[in-house]
Every structure is written in C-alpha cells, then in structure tokens.
Image (tube, rainbow, N blue to C red):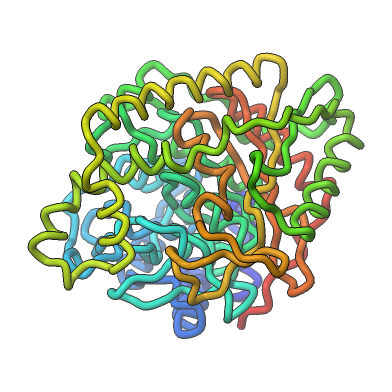
Length: 476
C-alpha cells in the first residue's frame, strides 16, 4: 500500500484523508520510506526532514480526529526546492557557503502551504543558487533523471521534478528564473507552471520591482497544480505585484471539462534560426492535433526573431547575479561552482546604460506578447528543443540535436522558456509524448496576463485528451 499512496495525486489524497480512508501518518511514512529508498538512486534531496514531518503528520491526524476544519492540503506531503526558505529546516541554496544555514522564517509560499496543512518532507536539489539549467553542485553532486540514469534531470529545479516524477511526493515547490521549473518538468514528464508575476508573492527576491524569478508549483497532474496554486496564490504586502490581486477558483477551472471551441491558439515550433529535434517536432504536432480536435482554432506565428532573447535575459539576470554573488566570487572562488563563476564573468562589465537598455527591451517584449494575446487566447510551443541531455552535459559545451552540434545550450535548448520570465505571462508545460529512448517530451502553453484559470483549463483538457498519465518511470 505504501508505494500506492505515494503515486496518488494530491487531489485524491485530499479526498481520502478528509474521508478518513487514509491517515496523514500513513501517507507521510510511505512518502518518507520511498524518499529514503530512492535517494541513493536519484540523489534528489539535500535534506530529508523525517522527524519534523512525522511530528506534523501526527498533529494533522489528531486534528482530523477532533473534526477540526481542514486546510486545502491537510496531511499531504510535499517537497521544497533548497532555494526557498523553510523555518527550522536547513536551506543551503545548493552552495557550500550556506551548507549549514537554517532560516528562522518560512518564505511566504512555504508559510501558505503550512497554513493549509501540507507537510514538508525534504529539501530538493538545485544547481548552486539556481544558476543553471542542470542540477548539480559541489555540495551534493548530480541529480539523475527519473526516467534514465544517464540523463540530466534538467534544472535548476531538478530535484523537485525528479521527486514528483518518481512518485516520492505528489507536490513540490520549485522556482523559475528562466525556465527552472519548466525545463526539469519537461525532462521528467511532469507538470510545471510559471504563473504570472505576483500571483504567488515572492518574499525572497531582493529586487521586487525588476524581478523575473517565481516560486512555483511542480506536480504530476494539472489538477494538482491547480490545487497547489490555490494554496499559494493571493496578495501579500511583501510583493507589490501581488497587491490587490483576486484569487480565482483554480481548482474549478482545472476540473471544468468541456472543449476549446472558440479558443484561438497561435503556435510556433522554434524562434527563427533555432533548432528543434525531429522527435520533439512530431510530438508537438501531435499535441496541436489534440488541441484542434477539441475545437481550438490554430494559427502559425509568423517567422520572427522577436523571441530570440537569450542575450537580453542574460544581461538582466547575470547582472543581478554579479551584484549578489560577486563579492563571494572575489573572496571565496574555491567555494563556488566553476559554471557560476563563468556566468558571473559574462556580466562583469555590463554598464548601467546597457542594463537599462535591456530593461527597455524587456518592456518591448512584454508589449509584443500582449499584442499576440489580444488576438489569440494562448500561445503553444515545444518546451524544449530536445529531450533530457546527458547527465554530464557542460553548460558551456555544445548541444547535440539530431546528429548536429550547436554552440549554446541556453539559446538552443530552451529558447521558449526565458521570454515569459521577462514578460510575466503564465506558462505551463505538460507531457505530450516520448522519444525513442523513452524520455518525456513537453509542450508549453502560454496564457494571457493573470489568465491562470483559463490556462489551467486548457492544459487539463490537453492532458486528458493525450492519455499519458498512466505512463510512469520505472524507479524502485
């Protein structure tokens, strides 16, 4: 029964716990047992907090027996990426510099899950400070893909995606600064949402006004993503983008059924000049066929270079990193990842004028996407240009796609994730097929600004039409 409990969606666990068919203690123990058993295989945790989790599970069970009001996630286990602060539980940011750091307070997103009754079972792996699309760091080593031991988990939320995909816990908190939720979600065949800016308040970002990073849900199903977002969303005084925002009924939207008649979807395979593998192209075309069969009207995006924005993203993002980590790079270079040091060097000489021009370009990109979504309800793209890369992929090495090598990993592997961090529009990835090696392929849908409810509805319909949920990685 233990592994069966681990594989249950959060929506099912919620109902079974409320009806006393299973207990929070039973579920949490099963999840912890699986986490301990699979950790040597997957290496997806930095910290497993078993004692704290079981204490919370016993308290949740007692509250249930006393007929107390239950939160949305009462007794449901979850994991949390080790970039996100958790009160009393070690939070390392994947860095040797913070290997013994224990926060005194929860991040706002964690506090909200705690108030809704969710139970933290561990902190998942991340590249150091979330600074690359692969999940490895000197602190813990490499995190393997849930489907293939020789492939990367993606990054930087690789541990969160692997833990969810491998059936350890149904939900995980992730983060996304350029695709760090959607990249590993696509690599591991799960659902990753980057919501609109402000929908989930970000209490840890130091530049809240120029922010392009998000604290996000990671789950196995669209319905679970909706449930998790329901608990995380809402205004907070710590984040001006969140103030005054209403919280729609995301759960209802994801469960609404129906079809896509009257919806217009603009699609694009790749930005001009960027590659895509033949297997990804076939899976994407199949996903488009499913959308069309449900009544959506499809139109192709005109060939454009407007979305070839990696240099823009890098100018803004890496300048933030230089400001945050530059002093450590000078004083403690041996304690930092070589790839992080290389990335800091890329922005070392960016001027204030160059940074401000990049921010002007960010505004132009936002307005361009707004224009596309005035005429269209959604945008559709492949999430990645190929499936998971080799586990020892070098961020600064070449990227192989269909027997050809390309010189830039970021610009050529995930050109479609970075734009929507900059614009703030919601984007969700979900599985749409598998390659010849059995590795998952993801499709990305992008919605209107603050249009998460409509986006979740469309994603849930696509998920149901494809019938891929029963296919799971063989990890034991």
